[in-house]
Image (cartoon, rainbow, N blue to C red; front, side, top):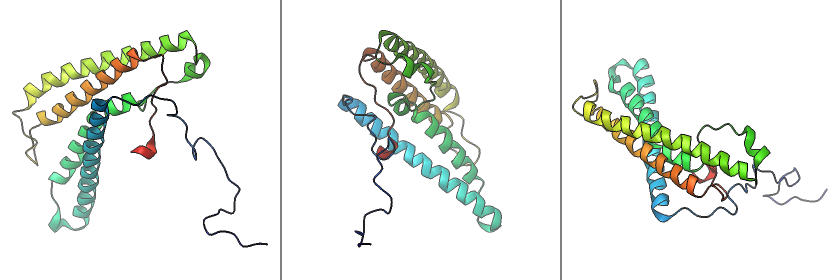
Length: 192
């Protein structure tokens, strides 16, 4: 048996949808403001994810080493988780990364009913995001004066991120309705 190159696998070459994804081939690029907004959402989401990790790890360490325990660790993790959930709404809606039921997508793909289905589903998401944005606006006014128990962060700040994420989701939904006849950008985990 001959010598194998160092980077060559013992298995034959496999090209699947997972090894060579083509899910965003032919999809037009988002406008610059949306790309910048998406990058901002990812940065804030990543910071919140780090907040979750730090809060949970510190909380676990505090249980084994009582001298360093801090009640704010759990609150930091909780507020980071809620903030990350809300701020990533627009990013996920813009890339079909939100929860969807794709039973009819493959059956109707390429036809007018498929476009109608995409318009209908985007309209439902638009109404949901607009409602969330309205409720977030109401909660900002009601909760900004109240501070969280351990850290002292204004609770209304979480709703500011919910408002931003909901408005971003609504904007992405409007664009999905407008361009429903085009190929749709899909969530690419490698790009995160």
